Image (cartoon, rainbow, N blue to C red):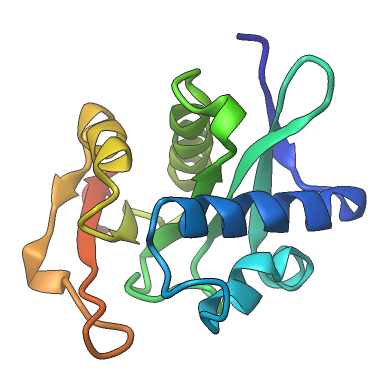
Length: 169
């Protein structure tokens, strides 16, 4: 598949926000269309201003998915330590699933973290039901870190993974 991964552009914010919202809703990861987290999922412009939002495009320029990469010092990190980068809100449109889009987005985050000075690991949180994503993480060398699992809101348990990039300084 001919795929381009790059920083999202303002004209793509709404489309990517809807892809992310629909992926979370369609996969049953939210409490329905009134879930307050939908607002954060759709807030691509805000994330792009405060972190790096990557978008996956097909050969025709159609948006197939995206992810938020949060380097050290950015406000979109939930579990990352000072020498760790984090990614979140990885989502792929239905028509992009099974075509390597999700893995390409994760690899782009890994590349960014590897090239960043002082970053020794890349971390993420995921819901237990996101089994397809878990397979990607494990295939790319991420290790489960159950000691870091957490609940952002009561009853929503998140699993964590970490990819060691280099030994700490």
